Amino acid sequence: MSVSVVIPCYRSARTLPALVTGVVAVLRELSVRHEVILVVDGSPDDTWRAATELAQRVEGVRALHLSRNYGQHNALVAGIREAECEVIVTMDDDLQHPPGQIPLLLAALEGDGLDLVYGVPHREEHGLVRNLASRSVKTAMAGGLGIRTARTISAFRAFRTRLRDGFQQLSGPHACVDVALSWATTKVGSVGVEMNERGHGRSNYTPGMLLRHAVNMLLGYSAAPLRAASYLGFLIGTVGLLLGGVVLWRFASGDTTVAGFTTIASMVTLFSSAQLISVGVLGEYIGRIHGNGMGRPTYVVRERVGSPAVAAVPRQPGGTKPGGTNPVGVGPGGAKPGGASGAVHAAAGSGSGER
Image: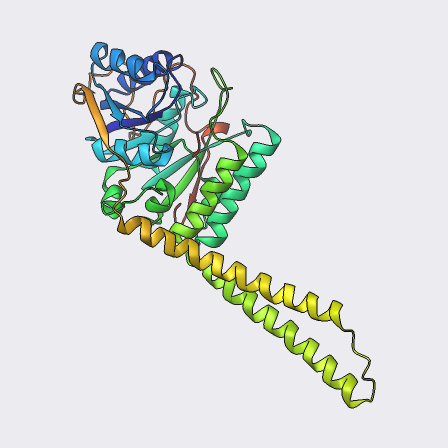
C-alpha cells in the first residue's frame, strides 16, 4: 500500500508544522510509500510560507499554491488530482483530525474490502448551531441527492485513488468531493475516530456558509429543486380548484355573498409567490449553466514546491503492515483498530467537509 495525504490549507500557518510532523511520523511507522500534499487555498496569511518551508525541509511533502481562494472542496480536487499513491487520505489543517487515527481508516479500507471510509467522530466537535447546520447539509445530501450514507460523511476520509477516475471531467466553481466519490463506488463504510479541539483560531465555515454549500450541492448535482417547484405548482393548483369549488357551491346555493378584495388579494399573492419561487429555481439552474458555459475553472495552481513520494521504510521489529493478520500499528496519539473506536460500519448504498 502507498498513501497520499491531502490537506487543504487556509489560515493555518500556526498548525501546519505540528500537523505535518505528526502525519509523517505515523506514515513512517506504517512503513508505506507516502506523500503529504498541502494545498494552500489562496490564504491571506503566512500559510504558503509555512507550507513551502515544510516542503523544502521534509522529504515527501509537496505544496500547491492556488491562485486565489476557490473553496475547500475545490482545493481537495486539486490535491486529489496531484496524488501519486494508491490510497488518498484527506484531513483538515486545524489539528482536529489526529494523525494517529489515520491507521484506523487504512485498516478499515483494507480489512473490509471497501473503496471509501469516513472517520466519524465519537462526539461532535463543534458548537450547537454549527452541528445543526452540518446535520442539515448531510440531510440535504441524503434526501436531495439520494446518498444513503450521507449522514456518516466527514472531512476525514480515506479512499482508493482509482475512484478519482469517476470525476476526471468535473469542472466549474462548485465542486463537492463527497458527491463526486458517490458517483464512483457503493462500497462505503465508516469507522469511529477521536477528534481534538481546534488548535488555533476558529472554523472558517460558518452556518451560513454551510447553508450555501448545501444549496450549491442541491442545485449543482440534483434536479430535486425542480421537482419541488413542480410539486408546489400542483399543490397551489389544487388549492385554487378547491377555492373555485367553494365559490361555485355558494353561488349555486344562493349565497352570493362572496368575500371581495381580501379573498382576491390573498389568492393573487399566493399564486404569485408560487410562480416567483418556480422562476427563481429555474433561474438558479440557468445561471449555473451560464457559469459553466463561461468556462470558470475549478482551480488554478500558481506554484508547486516539494519532492515526490517517499519510498517505504522497513518496519521495526514487532510491527505489522496494514492489511496483515494483526491490527495496524498506530502512531502517536492514536488508538488501535478493533477497539471501541475502531468499529467499522459498512454501507452497501450510494456513497457520499468542512473547513
